[in-house]
Image 1 (spheres, one colour):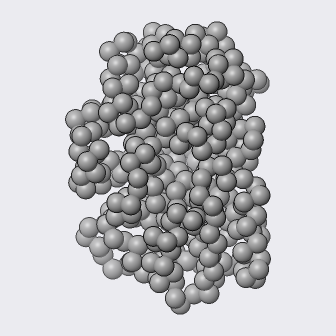
Image 2 (cartoon, one colour):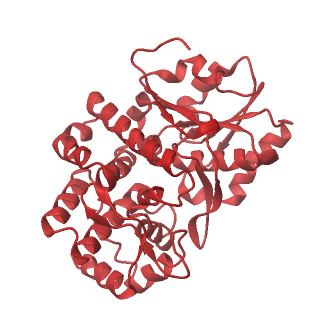
Image 3 (tube, one colour):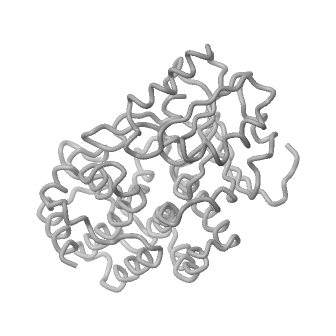
Length: 366
């Protein structure tokens, strides 16, 4: 591959399933990034109605030597379903694509999750490439091989671990990202500082204004550090039997919000931001964090223009019911990721319903 001095290359170390993450400006037109990772001569580009007018032609132009088809899905978390997933299978079958086909997922977390899951299932597994177009997908969902769809009773309850051939992160696509989606991505960036990188958390506090202004240097650094943290965790624990679970800080609360209020009402990053505030307050009640720590966390999340209070429409009892349907639970007990300190997450632990209830109720009154 011809060297691009402005492009950073990271690696997710997973033995024979290892793969690179490319991070750079304008790299969507680097044809060799595609040709080096495409299997066979058949490619299916899966995207959505929002992204297709912006970037689909740019991608297909790099694939003119392949038999390329496209499928354009509706945009939104509410469409992350088995019914919509079937449209990807329809496109693969109608074009008579075989096991050597490569699926290219061009979009945010929903497209990445659905495209990856379709690739994992079609003819028991075909190659796929992740091209994340939202900040949240670039720093989180595109890395690590988690794929799947939602169910009316729970988020991401149907899926598989399935690693891509590579992840192509073009920072230029963030120029078309709206403010709300951009802030949602910052939630996952903040998460890495909270769970394992206290120095990064402090850097985020010091550079939040630059990030909110989309300063290119600050943004590139934040994306790179997030991907480094995610890659290290995934390399150590691919299938979430240990330390990878800490990446779910705030997610059990957040998934309850998304499911309870209705998919799409809150963006994933917004729900996670609220969940991290609840997890921080619960960690204070467990006497690990102090009030100053919690204030730092809430302040940074607010500066990122993210919500911090749980929705008034969900009672504590409804929260508990929704949280009881979670992949991290064991034998019916709710398991949560909490913080021993800023930069140090704890593995999933059982927390009493009463303590969760009082935490939710106290934060709802803020």
